Image 1: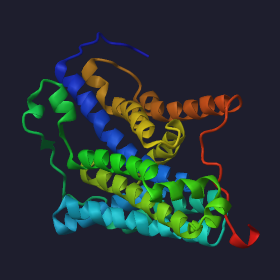
Image 2: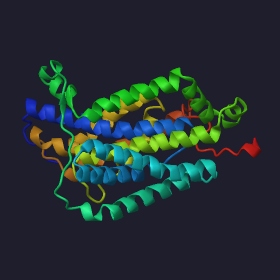
Image 3: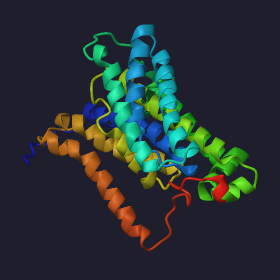
Image 4: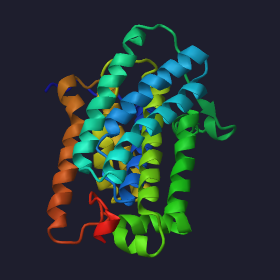
Length: 317
């Protein structure tokens, strides 16, 4: 490792923080969707595949219509649609959730590569423009970072607040959490376990698809094979890091987003560091977080939903 003389400039700092917000938005949308699914008791390891499907359909929808909003909508719908496969297999049919989720990842990645083959070198673009909040965007540094962002970033904040409110302050959220804690008890109380779990998985898939569409219509701005680059797996780890709470997931998204931003933002600081090692940082952090949480779980109760990953069959109640 060779460290050149640091030349930290205001532009470089702003660029790093702006990239952090962009990647944090990407991870938060996918992580929020996985949080909703897991709070209902369904583990979905297909986030990477759902993001890939959202990315390819988001790009195609955007360039063919000329509107990134159409692309975002199409990607969101596509993510929810493919998540329905996992919901059917893991919830309705009681299949092993780990196996079904991994199968969904492989299916999503393969299908996305197949569908997007003709769009790999497509020069067309349908990109979101940054939205400035009048007055606030003029604040030095802070305005450029927080108040001049993609509209999807603001949307992600709103969706996070809505998710927190629904999960903690509504009867629907109470039922969802009850289904994730004890499906038999929730069933006895009159909640539809299958219906709520399938709905949570589809909503989670839609948010993962939105994350993928945001990737191809703003962060990267194009479609290419492997565009998700394992970020779906980071989103899964993010849920554990955030203890299945939207607020903590958002905080974790900023941390992981910062490590992703470093991959392309170290050079302006005058740091000569191996790009291969830098690209490993998010995944090393992911592994480290999982190890620490596993060690802590030995000494204190896990905050995970008690029914997570356990299929429910009413006849066995």
